[in-house]
Image (tube, rainbow, N blue to C red; front, side, top):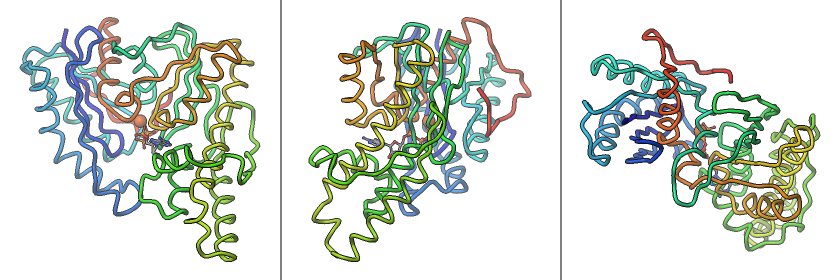
Length: 335
Ligand code: ATP
Ligand code: FE
Protein backbone atom coordinates (compact mmCIF):
# COMPACT_ATOMS: atom_id res chain seq x y z
CA UNK A 1 0.00 0.00 0.00
CA UNK A 2 1.06 3.58 -0.63
CA UNK A 3 0.73 6.04 2.25
CA UNK A 4 1.17 9.78 1.81
CA UNK A 5 2.56 11.57 4.88
CA UNK A 6 2.17 15.31 5.41
CA UNK A 7 4.08 17.35 8.02
CA UNK A 8 3.49 21.03 8.79
CA UNK A 9 3.96 21.41 12.56
CA UNK A 10 6.60 24.13 12.54
CA UNK A 11 8.55 25.80 9.73
CA UNK A 12 9.06 22.91 7.30
CA UNK A 13 6.42 21.89 4.79
CA UNK A 14 7.01 18.23 4.01
CA UNK A 15 5.40 15.36 2.11
CA UNK A 16 6.54 11.78 1.61
CA UNK A 17 5.28 8.53 0.14
CA UNK A 18 6.06 5.22 1.80
CA UNK A 19 5.46 1.66 0.65
CA UNK A 20 6.04 -1.25 3.02
CA UNK A 21 8.45 0.69 5.20
CA UNK A 22 10.48 1.91 2.23
CA UNK A 23 10.50 5.63 1.49
CA UNK A 24 9.73 6.34 -2.17
CA UNK A 25 9.96 10.11 -1.83
CA UNK A 26 10.73 12.55 0.96
CA UNK A 27 10.29 16.21 0.05
CA UNK A 28 10.91 19.11 2.45
CA UNK A 29 10.47 22.81 1.74
CA UNK A 30 12.41 24.64 4.45
CA UNK A 31 11.22 28.16 5.07
CA UNK A 32 14.14 30.53 4.68
CA UNK A 33 12.19 33.62 5.73
CA UNK A 34 12.69 32.98 9.48
CA UNK A 35 16.48 33.39 9.29
CA UNK A 36 16.06 37.16 9.09
CA UNK A 37 14.22 37.13 12.41
CA UNK A 38 16.51 34.71 14.25
CA UNK A 39 13.63 32.35 15.01
CA UNK A 40 10.36 31.00 13.67
CA UNK A 41 7.62 33.61 13.19
CA UNK A 42 4.31 31.69 13.44
CA UNK A 43 2.31 34.00 11.15
CA UNK A 44 4.90 33.78 8.38
CA UNK A 45 5.21 30.01 8.83
CA UNK A 46 1.49 29.50 8.33
CA UNK A 47 1.46 31.63 5.19
CA UNK A 48 4.47 29.81 3.73
CA UNK A 49 2.83 26.43 4.41
CA UNK A 50 -0.19 27.57 2.39
CA UNK A 51 2.08 28.48 -0.52
CA UNK A 52 4.19 25.31 -0.30
CA UNK A 53 1.80 22.52 0.44
CA UNK A 54 0.39 21.82 -3.03
CA UNK A 55 3.78 21.91 -4.85
CA UNK A 56 5.41 19.81 -2.11
CA UNK A 57 2.72 17.10 -2.20
CA UNK A 58 2.79 17.18 -6.00
CA UNK A 59 6.53 16.68 -6.02
CA UNK A 60 6.36 13.83 -3.49
CA UNK A 61 3.87 11.97 -5.68
CA UNK A 62 5.91 12.61 -8.82
CA UNK A 63 9.18 11.47 -7.22
CA UNK A 64 7.47 8.33 -5.93
CA UNK A 65 6.20 7.86 -9.46
CA UNK A 66 2.61 7.26 -8.41
CA UNK A 67 -0.75 8.90 -9.05
CA UNK A 68 -2.83 10.21 -6.15
CA UNK A 69 -5.51 7.64 -7.01
CA UNK A 70 -3.09 4.86 -6.02
CA UNK A 71 -2.84 6.14 -2.43
CA UNK A 72 -4.27 3.91 0.32
CA UNK A 73 -4.40 6.56 3.05
CA UNK A 74 -3.21 10.01 4.08
CA UNK A 75 -1.33 10.53 7.32
CA UNK A 76 -0.83 14.02 8.73
CA UNK A 77 0.69 15.70 11.78
CA UNK A 78 -2.13 16.58 14.14
CA UNK A 79 0.14 18.05 16.85
CA UNK A 80 1.95 19.20 18.86
CA UNK A 81 3.20 22.29 17.06
CA UNK A 82 2.22 25.80 15.99
CA UNK A 83 -1.55 26.04 15.58
CA UNK A 84 -1.48 28.11 12.38
CA UNK A 85 1.00 25.70 10.81
CA UNK A 86 -0.83 22.56 11.89
CA UNK A 87 -4.11 23.91 10.52
CA UNK A 88 -2.72 24.07 6.98
CA UNK A 89 -1.60 20.43 6.93
CA UNK A 90 -4.71 19.23 8.74
CA UNK A 91 -7.26 20.89 6.50
CA UNK A 92 -5.34 20.01 3.34
CA UNK A 93 -5.09 16.34 4.39
CA UNK A 94 -8.75 16.17 5.36
CA UNK A 95 -9.92 17.53 2.03
CA UNK A 96 -7.58 15.33 0.00
CA UNK A 97 -8.62 12.17 1.87
CA UNK A 98 -12.27 13.10 1.53
CA UNK A 99 -11.87 13.85 -2.17
CA UNK A 100 -10.10 10.55 -2.83
CA UNK A 101 -12.41 8.58 -0.54
CA UNK A 102 -9.53 7.06 1.45
CA UNK A 103 -8.81 6.87 5.21
CA UNK A 104 -7.27 9.76 7.08
CA UNK A 105 -4.71 8.99 9.81
CA UNK A 106 -3.70 11.46 12.50
CA UNK A 107 -0.11 11.35 13.75
CA UNK A 108 1.54 12.64 16.92
CA UNK A 109 4.67 14.54 15.84
CA UNK A 110 6.85 13.34 18.74
CA UNK A 111 5.77 9.71 18.31
CA UNK A 112 6.75 10.08 14.66
CA UNK A 113 10.25 11.29 15.61
CA UNK A 114 10.59 8.05 17.60
CA UNK A 115 9.01 5.71 15.07
CA UNK A 116 11.24 7.12 12.30
CA UNK A 117 13.62 4.39 13.45
CA UNK A 118 11.32 1.85 11.80
CA UNK A 119 11.80 3.28 8.30
CA UNK A 120 13.68 0.73 6.22
CA UNK A 121 17.01 2.31 5.28
CA UNK A 122 20.51 1.02 4.68
CA UNK A 123 22.33 2.63 7.61
CA UNK A 124 19.46 2.06 9.99
CA UNK A 125 18.60 -0.91 12.25
CA UNK A 126 15.30 -0.61 14.14
CA UNK A 127 15.55 -0.72 17.95
CA UNK A 128 14.13 -3.71 19.82
CA UNK A 129 11.28 -3.19 22.28
CA UNK A 130 11.40 -2.01 24.97
CA UNK A 131 13.74 0.90 24.28
CA UNK A 132 14.42 4.40 25.56
CA UNK A 133 13.98 7.25 23.10
CA UNK A 134 15.81 10.52 23.61
CA UNK A 135 14.19 13.13 21.38
CA UNK A 136 16.30 16.24 21.06
CA UNK A 137 15.22 19.04 18.75
CA UNK A 138 14.59 22.75 18.42
CA UNK A 139 11.25 22.45 20.17
CA UNK A 140 11.56 19.38 22.40
CA UNK A 141 13.77 17.47 24.80
CA UNK A 142 12.20 14.24 26.02
CA UNK A 143 13.05 10.80 27.34
CA UNK A 144 10.36 8.27 26.47
CA UNK A 145 10.02 4.59 27.40
CA UNK A 146 8.75 2.78 24.31
CA UNK A 147 7.19 -0.62 25.03
CA UNK A 148 5.45 -1.04 21.67
CA UNK A 149 4.73 1.11 18.59
CA UNK A 150 1.95 2.99 20.32
CA UNK A 151 2.71 2.28 23.97
CA UNK A 152 4.92 5.14 25.08
CA UNK A 153 5.53 6.64 28.48
CA UNK A 154 7.08 10.08 28.95
CA UNK A 155 9.76 9.68 31.64
CA UNK A 156 11.14 13.20 31.56
CA UNK A 157 11.29 16.41 29.56
CA UNK A 158 12.58 19.95 29.63
CA UNK A 159 10.96 22.30 32.09
CA UNK A 160 11.96 25.36 30.01
CA UNK A 161 14.01 25.62 26.77
CA UNK A 162 14.64 22.73 24.41
CA UNK A 163 18.21 21.56 23.83
CA UNK A 164 18.20 22.91 20.25
CA UNK A 165 17.26 26.30 21.67
CA UNK A 166 20.19 26.08 24.09
CA UNK A 167 22.49 25.56 21.10
CA UNK A 168 20.83 28.25 18.99
CA UNK A 169 20.62 30.88 21.76
CA UNK A 170 24.25 30.31 22.74
CA UNK A 171 25.17 30.65 19.08
CA UNK A 172 23.22 33.92 18.88
CA UNK A 173 25.18 35.28 21.86
CA UNK A 174 28.37 34.44 19.95
CA UNK A 175 27.03 36.31 16.91
CA UNK A 176 26.42 33.25 14.69
CA UNK A 177 23.53 33.23 12.19
CA UNK A 178 20.32 31.28 13.00
CA UNK A 179 20.09 28.36 13.53
CA UNK A 180 23.55 28.28 15.07
CA UNK A 181 23.55 24.72 16.51
CA UNK A 182 25.44 23.18 13.58
CA UNK A 183 28.06 25.97 13.76
CA UNK A 184 28.70 25.37 17.47
CA UNK A 185 29.19 21.71 16.57
CA UNK A 186 31.61 22.58 13.75
CA UNK A 187 33.85 24.81 15.89
CA UNK A 188 33.50 22.57 18.97
CA UNK A 189 35.34 19.83 17.12
CA UNK A 190 38.41 22.10 16.96
CA UNK A 191 38.36 23.28 20.58
CA UNK A 192 39.09 22.24 24.16
CA UNK A 193 35.88 21.07 25.87
CA UNK A 194 37.29 21.73 29.35
CA UNK A 195 38.44 25.30 28.63
CA UNK A 196 35.47 27.01 30.30
CA UNK A 197 33.40 25.07 32.80
CA UNK A 198 29.65 25.79 32.83
CA UNK A 199 27.50 24.34 35.58
CA UNK A 200 24.79 21.86 34.72
CA UNK A 201 21.33 22.86 35.98
CA UNK A 202 19.82 20.73 38.74
CA UNK A 203 16.30 19.39 38.22
CA UNK A 204 14.70 15.98 38.87
CA UNK A 205 16.75 13.01 37.55
CA UNK A 206 15.08 12.56 34.16
CA UNK A 207 13.97 16.15 33.48
CA UNK A 208 15.99 18.87 31.76
CA UNK A 209 16.49 22.61 32.14
CA UNK A 210 18.43 24.74 29.68
CA UNK A 211 17.47 28.35 30.36
CA UNK A 212 20.13 28.71 33.06
CA UNK A 213 22.87 27.62 30.70
CA UNK A 214 21.90 30.29 28.18
CA UNK A 215 22.11 32.94 30.91
CA UNK A 216 25.43 31.55 32.15
CA UNK A 217 26.86 31.76 28.63
CA UNK A 218 25.53 35.31 28.23
CA UNK A 219 27.05 36.60 31.50
CA UNK A 220 30.33 34.82 30.83
CA UNK A 221 30.66 36.30 27.34
CA UNK A 222 29.65 39.79 28.48
CA UNK A 223 32.25 39.71 31.25
CA UNK A 224 35.05 38.43 29.04
CA UNK A 225 34.28 40.77 26.15
CA UNK A 226 34.41 43.73 28.54
CA UNK A 227 37.99 42.75 29.42
CA UNK A 228 38.96 41.81 25.88
CA UNK A 229 36.80 42.95 22.93
CA UNK A 230 38.31 40.20 20.76
CA UNK A 231 37.54 37.44 23.24
CA UNK A 232 35.01 35.62 21.03
CA UNK A 233 37.13 35.72 17.88
CA UNK A 234 40.24 34.58 19.73
CA UNK A 235 38.61 31.74 21.65
CA UNK A 236 35.72 30.71 19.42
CA UNK A 237 36.59 27.00 19.22
CA UNK A 238 37.18 26.59 22.96
CA UNK A 239 33.96 28.44 23.82
CA UNK A 240 31.95 26.25 21.43
CA UNK A 241 33.63 23.06 22.66
CA UNK A 242 32.89 23.98 26.27
CA UNK A 243 29.21 24.74 25.60
CA UNK A 244 28.79 21.54 23.60
CA UNK A 245 30.57 19.46 26.22
CA UNK A 246 28.25 20.80 28.95
CA UNK A 247 25.12 20.08 26.91
CA UNK A 248 26.20 16.62 25.76
CA UNK A 249 27.33 15.43 29.17
CA UNK A 250 24.05 16.73 30.62
CA UNK A 251 22.06 14.71 28.06
CA UNK A 252 24.18 11.64 28.83
CA UNK A 253 23.66 12.07 32.60
CA UNK A 254 19.90 12.03 32.05
CA UNK A 255 20.08 8.97 29.79
CA UNK A 256 22.14 7.15 32.42
CA UNK A 257 19.48 8.00 35.02
CA UNK A 258 16.76 6.65 32.72
CA UNK A 259 18.72 3.43 32.09
CA UNK A 260 19.14 3.01 35.84
CA UNK A 261 15.46 3.70 36.46
CA UNK A 262 14.14 1.28 33.79
CA UNK A 263 16.93 -1.27 33.35
CA UNK A 264 16.63 -0.72 29.58
CA UNK A 265 19.92 -0.41 27.65
CA UNK A 266 18.47 -0.11 24.15
CA UNK A 267 18.65 3.58 23.24
CA UNK A 268 17.28 5.41 20.20
CA UNK A 269 17.81 9.11 19.61
CA UNK A 270 15.96 11.44 17.27
CA UNK A 271 15.31 15.09 16.46
CA UNK A 272 17.61 17.60 14.75
CA UNK A 273 20.17 17.75 17.56
CA UNK A 274 20.98 14.04 16.98
CA UNK A 275 23.11 15.33 14.11
CA UNK A 276 25.49 16.66 16.75
CA UNK A 277 28.91 15.02 16.59
CA UNK A 278 29.38 15.25 20.37
CA UNK A 279 26.24 13.28 21.24
CA UNK A 280 27.03 10.71 18.56
CA UNK A 281 30.51 10.20 19.97
CA UNK A 282 29.21 9.98 23.54
CA UNK A 283 26.66 7.33 22.53
CA UNK A 284 29.30 5.28 20.71
CA UNK A 285 31.45 5.40 23.85
CA UNK A 286 28.49 4.36 26.03
CA UNK A 287 28.04 1.25 23.88
CA UNK A 288 31.53 0.11 24.86
CA UNK A 289 31.52 1.42 28.41
CA UNK A 290 28.02 0.47 29.60
CA UNK A 291 26.97 -2.19 27.08
CA UNK A 292 24.21 -0.05 25.57
CA UNK A 293 22.87 -0.58 22.08
CA UNK A 294 22.30 2.78 20.43
CA UNK A 295 20.46 3.85 17.31
CA UNK A 296 20.73 7.12 15.39
CA UNK A 297 18.49 7.58 12.36
CA UNK A 298 19.70 8.97 9.05
CA UNK A 299 19.93 12.75 9.23
CA UNK A 300 17.00 13.33 6.86
CA UNK A 301 14.80 11.34 9.27
CA UNK A 302 16.11 13.21 12.34
CA UNK A 303 14.98 16.72 11.46
CA UNK A 304 11.35 17.46 10.69
CA UNK A 305 10.28 15.35 7.73
CA UNK A 306 7.19 13.63 6.35
CA UNK A 307 8.72 10.15 5.93
CA UNK A 308 8.36 9.72 9.69
CA UNK A 309 4.71 10.74 9.44
CA UNK A 310 4.19 8.27 6.59
CA UNK A 311 5.77 5.35 8.52
CA UNK A 312 3.46 6.01 11.48
CA UNK A 313 0.61 6.24 8.96
CA UNK A 314 1.52 2.81 7.62
CA UNK A 315 1.79 1.26 11.10
CA UNK A 316 -1.61 2.70 12.02
CA UNK A 317 -3.11 1.73 8.64
CA UNK A 318 -2.26 -1.92 9.31
CA UNK A 319 -4.08 -1.69 12.64
CA UNK A 320 -6.94 0.32 11.08
CA UNK A 321 -6.34 3.16 13.50
CA UNK A 322 -8.04 5.86 11.45
CA UNK A 323 -8.98 9.42 12.38
CA UNK A 324 -12.55 10.65 12.61
CA UNK A 325 -13.58 12.91 9.72
CA UNK A 326 -14.09 15.77 12.21
CA UNK A 327 -10.56 15.50 13.64
CA UNK A 328 -8.97 18.86 14.56
CA UNK A 329 -5.36 20.00 14.93
CA UNK A 330 -4.07 19.96 18.51
CA UNK A 331 -1.19 22.35 19.24
CA UNK A 332 -0.62 20.85 22.71
CA UNK A 333 -1.31 17.22 21.84
CA UNK A 334 -0.40 14.86 24.71
CA UNK A 335 1.34 11.50 24.34
P1 ATP B 1 10.60 20.19 16.72
O1 ATP B 1 11.03 19.00 15.95
O2 ATP B 1 10.66 20.00 18.17
O3 ATP B 1 9.30 20.74 16.25
P2 ATP B 1 12.49 21.81 15.19
O4 ATP B 1 11.73 21.58 13.96
O5 ATP B 1 13.01 23.17 15.43
O6 ATP B 1 11.67 21.36 16.46
P3 ATP B 1 14.55 19.99 14.26
O7 ATP B 1 14.38 20.39 12.84
O8 ATP B 1 14.34 18.57 14.60
O9 ATP B 1 13.69 20.83 15.28
O10 ATP B 1 16.00 20.42 14.76
C1 ATP B 1 16.50 21.72 14.62
C2 ATP B 1 17.44 21.99 15.76
O11 ATP B 1 18.57 21.11 15.69
C3 ATP B 1 17.98 23.41 15.74
O12 ATP B 1 17.90 23.92 17.04
C4 ATP B 1 19.44 23.22 15.31
O13 ATP B 1 20.31 24.18 15.81
C5 ATP B 1 19.73 21.86 15.91
N1 ATP B 1 20.88 21.20 15.27
C6 ATP B 1 20.98 20.72 14.01
N2 ATP B 1 22.20 20.20 13.78
C7 ATP B 1 22.90 20.34 14.94
C8 ATP B 1 24.22 19.99 15.36
N3 ATP B 1 25.08 19.39 14.54
N4 ATP B 1 24.58 20.31 16.63
C9 ATP B 1 23.70 20.91 17.47
N5 ATP B 1 22.46 21.26 17.14
C10 ATP B 1 22.06 20.99 15.89
FE1 FE C 1 10.13 17.86 15.02
